[in-house]
Length: 59
Image (cartoon, rainbow, N blue to C red; front, side, top):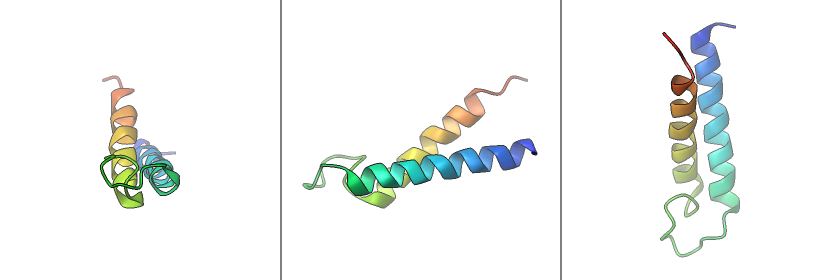
């Protein structure tokens, strides 16, 4: 598997996990940045997964 495909898959998995957390989260007021909406959770999940994917690389 190519490294770029691996990074893309990790980011997509993070976005999916974040979307699930945002969708099934307990915050209904909209004040919680992660769990207020599913798309915001997906965005946070993708960013965190991207940091993990790029942070584990050594040059």
